[in-house]
Image 1 (cartoon, helix red, strand yellow):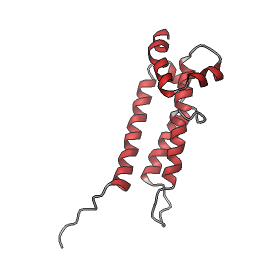
Image 2 (cartoon, one colour):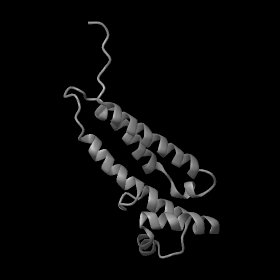
Image 3 (tube, rainbow, N blue to C red):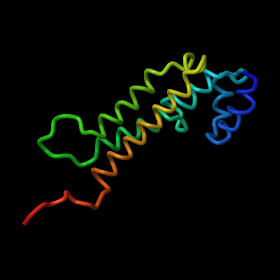
Image 4 (tube, rainbow, N blue to C red):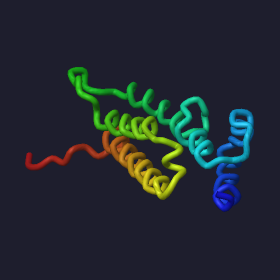
Length: 133
């Protein structure tokens, strides 16, 4: 744990500006699970991934959609999937063993998928290809 705390956590805290929040909340030395909770799953910490995903969900909900479409849009499904993964994540489990790397890889892949869907549906200036005249 000492290597993790010294070489991985402290720089992350400085970047995420969360050292003071951690100290006021946990009143203890750095613990891996508590750090992951604060930086990943804490929906009240503006620097946490989960907090930012809540904002993404709100933005996605306000994107234009066909009036008759009752089903969730592709971007809503991907954003809800990211939110669900963070809600179900157990910081204790992520802190133990080799679970953190695959979890973060999945989050990155899901965020990339969300970016691709948003780019395709809202930012691409190419219309559907037309054949014949």
